[in-house]
Length: 116
Image (tube, rainbow, N blue to C red; front, side, top):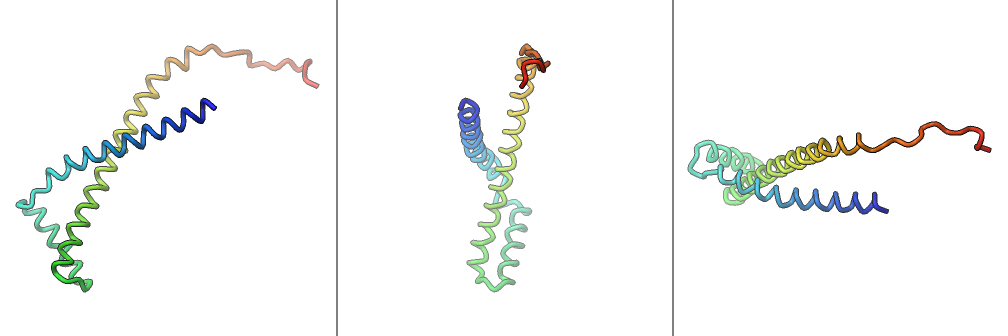
């Protein structure tokens, strides 16, 4: 039961951390998307032209281009938050290694005379 509860609490904590941290990373990444930058304008224009080539109206194509850009930022923010979680879990595991080594091992030999 303790293992099940520990796993459930661990997953809940990791999920909460990912959701919160991905929003923080998203804010940091969006700050770099300045509409006056040439690279951003060029990317939006490329996406818009791609959607227009598929038959969308110019205003719909622009909206979809912004949507794709937003999804790309959100994907990158999620990857960054997963990287943070894996780093923190790695540190926690390294901290736990000395405690595992301090656990005394019981008898590893089985007395065959008591086995029926």
